[in-house]
Length: 365
Image (tube, rainbow, N blue to C red):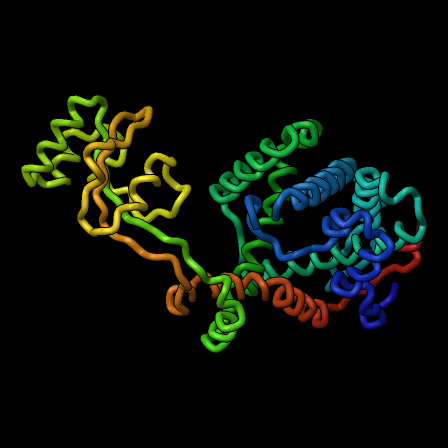
């Protein structure tokens, strides 16, 4: 085996991205599924390519479980050792073969691509092992309630994409699936706590970002309206007569309105054009005086009935000031710093680790 100090920068995910995107450029999604990026929410943060990576991760782990149950002695062979913990060669080969099967159309038995993929896959498995060890050291766990919630979210994403994951799971024990997915969630919590939560853009950085991107901080015209909806013209006329007699608008909402916003005293809130039905926009964006009521002679009519509006507030289109934009700027800067922060943190774990690789096994077919 070769010590970690002899591994070149090319053997890390950060270094390996360049050659993979060069010679395996057509398989961009393939390369991304091998690169172990900062774990995130299945519903966003991870997107659907991560779903594929998780499936491979889970299937490989479940095959490992089956062999352990059979007492397979071949598991003693290690392709790498990370801080005295083995990455078994057969586990590595199983995941590698699953990956080749999934991306056979792109790889096309190209030895050079297969060699690059092996390096990337081993790098990912080493990093997974480092994350496992760091999570244990810091006492990070996932309880059954959290696991159940996230599994349900994962199933929701898969069902909305390409028919679900039931086909993948037919021959997998539920306990094995849960165990491997739980490991992924623990990694996610670790990275969130140790990396993402510590990214704190300074006020100076936010101000500089705002100054460079002023034109992106513009707001559309907005109105804040309250409304009464009634089911027929007779009731509409009755409400209009009450308004002419200066009856309180909110009292009339509570007495006559038929739509769900009645619970909020008819308040629809701040809206831009296109949020509400077109019939509403044509009236409410012509209203200019706070407290004014929509015209009586041309009532707004939809399938819900007749509508009467009162203008509660108005904001013209224009540039959003720095103070209002700070939250949005902070989120943008955090997103832009995530990958670099994660890579720096993970490289730190790797530098402190003792890693040995069996180069002969890595080169084996």
